[in-house]
Length: 371
Image 1 (tube, rainbow, N blue to C red):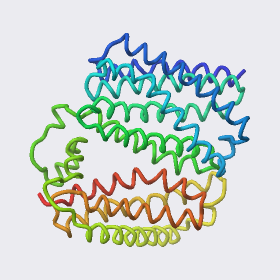
Image 2: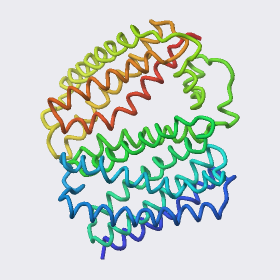
Image 3: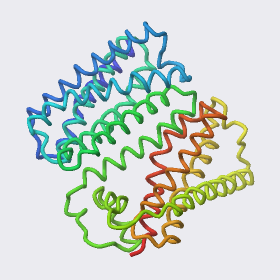
Image 4: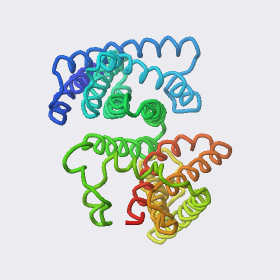
């Protein structure tokens, strides 16, 4: 009875998301919003049925949080979910009804909300309160991940390559997120939390695209950049500089600096925490008191990326953030590669933290580029 009530409440909450989205993006059609919301419900229902059939045929399940769960999420759950959402939105793209980037974000996010509502009902029908709780935690990610590639799809005719990249990033993030929700505690907080924070930040940047506040000419000072963050278009222009040659040696230097700063940052965090009496031996245990040590380690690792991005940008004296960003990406790939050999289960944490680490590196580099 309790799972049914919780699932019904969650489904109603998901179906009410378009009301909030239309307040943020008011220049959208109510009929199209209702249509994509209903299409999302149908897509979510089909996805739930397909996942159940595939699970019975292969013996793989999302439950448990093991390697099989991650494989199932990467190869079936996430591609199927994001692919069905695209099918809901694609007619609007073909008929040229998506409008601008903000409207594309809105319609795709509404499809994600309908999808989340159907998954909430499916969890309630399974009479599993924990699955309903996971569906609730997945609701904002379902909406934001769809909104991300919807934003890129609306710009596809002018910037075609970004949709495929956005959809692939959303699919991988979806797989990591749903897998992270099934990890032992404090895995969901340490893994899904930073990923969700990254999605919120990117959605905010996407929705302010084209607003009066984002159209600021010239390069601001460091304090202006902190007070008035750049738009996605400005960041894209800073990241992709076609009017100058790439500096490969600074990419290698950036990767080494990032790794070095990360090691120094983690060492400083461990030393300070040990002085404060924090016990890191519980960091790999499934207990509530492991949240603090894990959060400290995650914070120490992430703090290295804006610092290294800033240092490399200042040292290279480059007008863009390409080299520091690629250096950070190379460092992330090195870490993931090492973890894949030494600690495969930790790859999930690394993949979940990778987007926010890359964004922090770009932010630090943005503050350090030549003005």
